Length: 275
Image: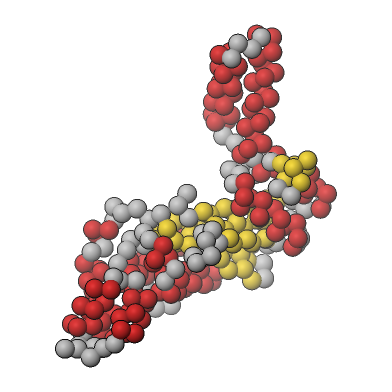
């Protein structure tokens, strides 16, 4: 019988996120050699990569790095919360975000194709993690912001890594206002920065729905146009950041708060695992 302890099984499970039975089998096959057991799990995992392609990755984490005038953020997905809180998965995310910060790619495709110091592409590195961890691992999205920024990461559960992250690009440094706006975005999930960013067909659809709803409610014909526009304005307050009531003071819009602080927002990124 191979010589290994329950602590070896526990360590192997934490490192690879493989099941307990698989860890024991790997240690048996490796005759107690821990490093060889890791390699066995990795090889067996690679054989199952294609089988995992159709699986859903609704867990994971959002991680970021901010130094000087550069802030980057990425979302890395997996299948289970067990893997998301494993040291190995978080180490993979850390290596990816460090590389993202170093190269500042234009989009996720360019990032996936870029080479790490090891010579492997980011996608190859993720595929290896997929194999080692025994789950489908997916890089979902990235953000690169330069200049004045605010960053906020939020843990939706105390035993999990952050699953919600926000980066806000500002016209100048403003730590307090920037953090307030980032936390507001995290809570209220706006889809657009300004009214002009909302697609015209989406606005027209909302206007049509509002008008038909008013008619079906039996509103006076003379009042329907005003009611319709009022409801479209209400829709804008839901989806447009600058028009939303500010989280800390509902009597003010986000735009008013920014004007009072002498700050403007040029862009924002909000990543939420599973959305």
